[in-house]
Image (cartoon, rainbow, N blue to C red; front, top):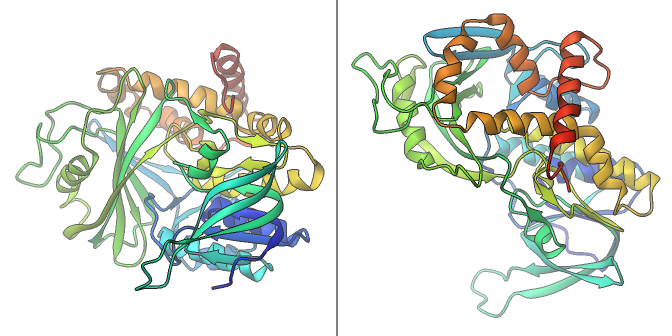
Length: 433
């Protein structure tokens, strides 16, 4: 582990996909970069581990295509629910036509190593707790450095001077809060749980989701292991992502708003879901490494930038409200912030505007649609009709996965962008404001 320097050009706080991508791109552009994290790597991260074609495209930009292809390659989404099973291939077009899944312990460590190979100084086990300001700018970041084992003295505080600061410290973003970040819960947010379990379908070429997710204690598994048909249908979904390692990532998530908060315990829900699909997916043994997380979504935060600092990835609530995906946005915003810092001296207005330009329309319509799904019994009423239409579900996969890019000019892309513009015009609080 490197020691903290006295000063650097750019401090990047948080070494997940967003922070490591930002650090790598900044170093490749010639900047002296310090990448820090409170954890000691390799470390786990609560996540579904899925990599959509959008994430694959960003990893390829970083030169990691061959590394990624050594992991499971999936064709698309197999969706289950309301008596139907549909296999929906990734649409391709301007994005790759394949996806993958890599455990975050491995993915994040490899991305951090990629940044180090680009010339980044990486220090883990140090927590950014404050900043020193010079007027309206951040002049330095204050770190708490843990003591050696057995040392009972107060942890040291170390200050690192910098010209720029990138904050990528996750959904809770403690340093973002110091800088004034606020999370606004009137729009939809997620509550998700993740686990790992041995499975004889670890090499399945499809990722799977179950849209008919039912509350625990209101049905359970039948004698043959199939899902019960009783109980409340929740506004969320369950997933099984094959990892090619003898295990799958199995998880469940629900959606909520301040007006309609989640009223289900996520870990019991996840265990109930696992029992419902145990036979069908060849699950072997108990769930391990169960963890849960609260997910701000759809740019539902304000104060994401100052004159010489910016929030990216999960810290900026860059999480898809319709599927909980955040890795792709983390990688994208890491690249975009590096490009923006190379073009602009003052980020205070430029960075929020750029985030709205890239994600405002899609986040606005996505969180509006996701918010509608939180209305009790609505999913149970609409789900069966939707699952009977492969055409509709193919469109839903593309829209829910944000697999529409600026280059796409087909009808589905035009409809999605039109809906996004209309939704954005109606927003009381647009994304990132």
